[in-house]
Length: 165
Image (tube, rainbow, N blue to C red; front, side, top):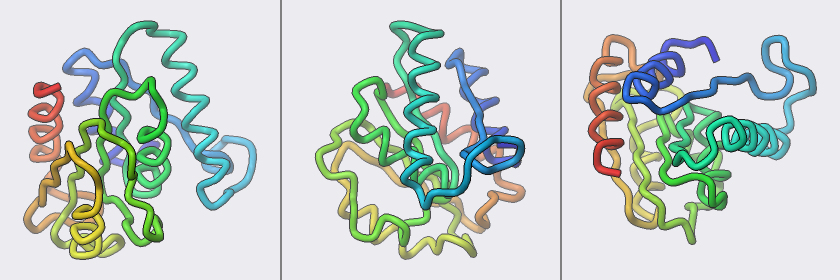
């Protein structure tokens, strides 16, 4: 919740008047519960969506997630009618185990560093080929998993995507 990527994404969305909510998954930081390999964490995302839907009724939702948060968030966003579009950063494609968000025809943006040491770019690009349209994947040349020295590019990519919705 407090890493630079998550903070920058939230800051960018807020700057273009999209309310944001950053939260820790169960068992992270001061939150209660224990890690559940993505299953329980999907419930955490659903609770967050419910909170935002009640707090900002009628506003479209753009769900963004980073790393494990992208894995969990994209899976929920693909099936949840409250979500209009989704953004994944540093998506760990190997975690999807063949699941490619089939049936989701919402706009999808993936932002991925070409030098990502935790979620190799080539694996994510190959997985992305099977993800249904509409979709776009932007390779940030030279960026590592945390987009070190490339967060300005990430910001511009997100703004460009949201402006097309």
